[in-house]
Image (cartoon, rainbow, N blue to C red; front, side):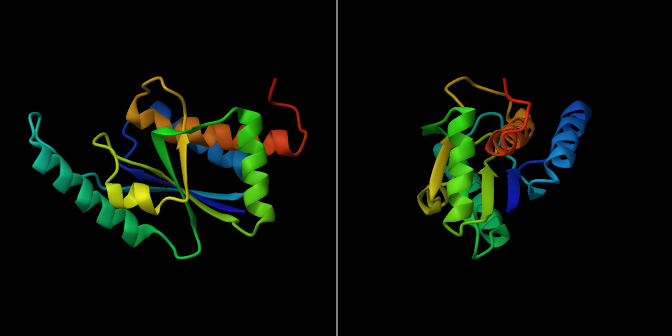
Length: 159
């Protein structure tokens, strides 16, 4: 299985980069996983809806240029489907069995994702209703992917 985590931003904090790196290393026996960082579009401190929409559209263009034709697009979206770790594990196994073994998880910038990206997604995944720091999401997602693979193989880790 090939998985790309596409982040519209750069991970700035050292401890978060190290955390993502650790889970990427742990994922190697299970899947080929890559983190792709795209430049986010700067938005002024006080912005209009038009400026926000323009920033999202520009970021959407970057995302679309990055996506591959054979990738199953998943967006992280607070309004998406919430899953337990076991459900995520089963969902990943179902993707692999159905031939969707190239997954692209997109994490939008702090301004969110353009409607074009949301409508193109084949699945919207919510990590819960709580608000998390944007920079934290790649590590949280990588950890949950690792947990999902461990569960799927019946290996100890998830308790």
